[in-house]
Each structure stands twice: as C-alpha cells, then as structure tokens.
Amino acid sequence: MNEADNKNKKSTEELEKILERTLKELNINTEKDLSLLDYNSDFKNYFLKSQDILKVKNYSLLVRDAVTAGKVFKSLEDVGISNVNIEKTEYSKSESLLLELKYLTIKKAKINALKMLEPLNQKLGKAIFITDNNSISNTLQGKVSGIQIRGASSLYGSKASEPILVEFQKIKFQSQVNVKFIIE
Image (cartoon, rainbow, N blue to C red; front, side, top):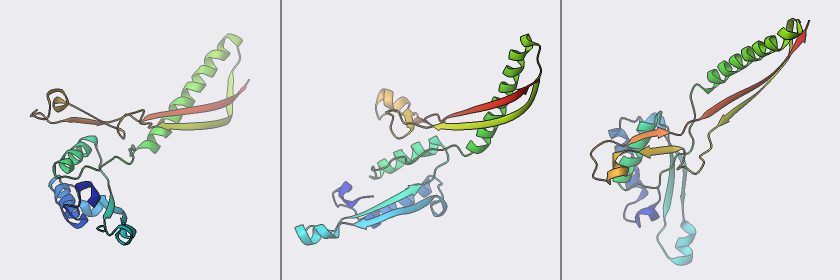
C-alpha cells in the first residue's frame, strides 16, 4: 500500500483498516495468513522538497486456491487498493509428487532394460547406480504473475453478472533418473 497510489487521499493506516476489513469479509484469517513484509517512509523528500511524507507498506497474503486469489484481487480493486501482485505459486504436495515420479521413472527404466535384453538372451541384474534430477517449471511466460482470469466479464464488459473463473497457471514437474544395471 502506497499513499502516492491514491494521491494522498487516504493514509496507509486507513488503507490498512480497509485491507483487513475486506479480507475478513472474504473469510480470510488475517492473523494467520497476512504478514507485513516492509514498511518505509519517504522522509528525505520532506526536507528536500517540502512535500508530504509518504508511507509505503508491503504485505504478503497466503491464499490456498486460485478462486480465492481472484476474489482478493477483485475485492481489493473495488475498495481502491490496486497495487497487488502474486509473489509466487507453489504446490503443497510437491515433495510427494516428485517421489512418485521418481518411482514411476525407475520402474520404467527397469522395464526398458528388460525389453532391450530380451533379444540378447541375457538377464537383468541388480541396479548398481541411480541418480536423479528433478525439475519444477513455473515460468510465467508473459502471463500476469502466474494467474489467468477469464470469464463473462472479459467477454461482455464489467456489467456481466456471472462470477469470474480463475485458475493458476499449471506447474510442470519432471523427474529424470539414470539407472545402471548389472547384465548377467
């Protein structure tokens, strides 16, 4: 929140109260999910240019789904807080998903090795070396901060009565495994 964004009509304290009230109306636990990241004021301009002291506060809000994020964006814009962006998106079960991907990749490596040895009339022995390389791709690729908003209002203007459909950009998980087996 920046006092300069609203042309000094509302103080950061007023904006703070509006922010908290708006988030509580959306059933967001502000004590748990909202945290102050940074607070500063532009005091040097006061002495140099005799202008008002402008304060800036940066907050971080944890939301757990894209629909809630869309509601937050819309509600904050409606009350005059528009300098909002998505800091990051992440999947809460990424570790277990990566483990499952490794399991499936090693299983596929064994099946491939068995099929390649079949015409040679040789047997597959124990695995003697395994390495892995995980990849999580969440690049924004020109999209607005990892979120896509689409729905009736984008097609028919702001007078549409249907709610906006919101979804986060897909996160791509990859697992690459190198397995070396003994050939008997």
